[in-house]
Amino acid sequence: MATKANSKAGPGRAQKKGRSSGGRTTAPNQSVQSARYTPPVPKSVKTSSRWLGITILALFLVGVLVVILDYADLLPGGVSNLWLVAAIAVIFVGLILATRYH
Image (cartoon, rainbow, N blue to C red):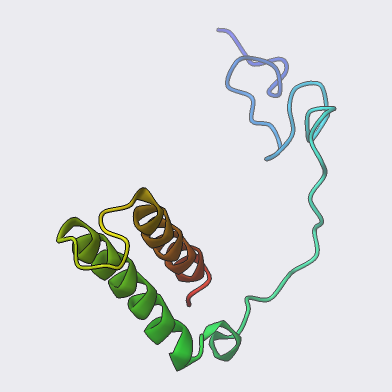
């Protein structure tokens, strides 16, 4: 009858979590994370003011309105690419503000 001489040897041996067979916890080029607990940011800090949402919507609407008015030839100077560039810039500013909205 066969007996197990060494219970730790073999392919089914469990290793500690986060350790590789070489004993390192991270690769040499990776930064080591701190074991300290960082509490989550309270919800009251994450709320944006009301004017930010209104500004985002206003910028989007003004940009779209300028594009429509330019193609309808209702803006001063006739149909111009400068109006379209300005409209895209206004929409882009609204998009940047939208990424900061909570």
